[in-house]
Amino acid sequence: MLDRTGRLLARTAELVDTRLSVPTRVPLLSVIVPAYNEAGTVAEVIRRVQEVAIEKEIIVVDDGSTDGTGEILSEIARLSSAAAEPASCDLLRIFRQDRNRGKGAALRRGFQEACGRIVIIQDADLELNPNEYAKLIRPIEEGQADVVYGSRFLGKSRVEIPFLHLAANKLLTAASNALTGLNLTDVWTGYKAFRREILEKIDLVEDRFGFEPEITAKIAKAGCQVQELPVAYACRTRAQGKKIGWKDAVRGMWCTVRYGLFSYPGL
Image (tube, rainbow, N blue to C red; front, side):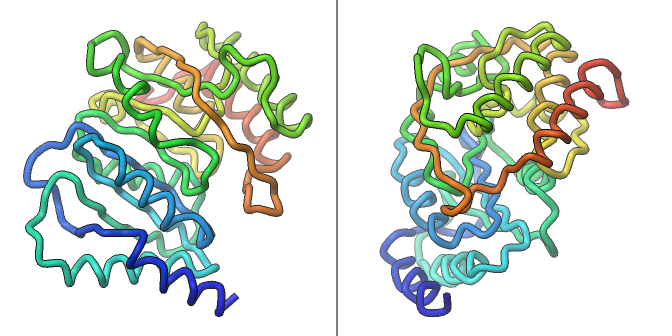
């Protein structure tokens, strides 16, 4: 593991050219990257996001990683602090949770730090393609939507997802639609984009993957205009680092019912 982490750190200087700062003006896009034990992919994900030709900031939240992700991000921070270029809107900001709190908690931290007019979630794996950003944020830029979900299933006859994961997703999405009145195909997608003002109005509390049904129920209660667009997807296995499991599906159903049926302060 140490040799592998060392090789990844050695590659970081080639993969990442970034600066740590606060935007001097409001960027169009804030990309929130929650990362837990993603040493094998986080630097490559950052590189791919940086290559997207959109004015942006990238906010990475290390959620208490123990596999070398933190060391890789520390090296990125070291390289950034040594950079001579002035701060710009297209920059990287790194934050660390004191312990593993879950994806929802990491996203809350990222949302709090976001400065962009539009906020999009980017998982720290390689399942989704950052080249989809322009398509996903266009309806928000044009005033046609407040929120856009990138569906892995829309317009596709078959998606390479294990049967149990696919069945759970379909069941949870159907339950969410029944309770929210939305007509989505993929509530649990990793690609969700929001007008930042929407996130500022919503009080989020779920620490783990319950974030997905929680945010969906709360944007529905807020009367947001929601669009769904198809995205490409390259599924990974648990052996490759996939985190979500059956316990999250059970919690997901509870959160679907809880937030779909009942109102809470802050929606």
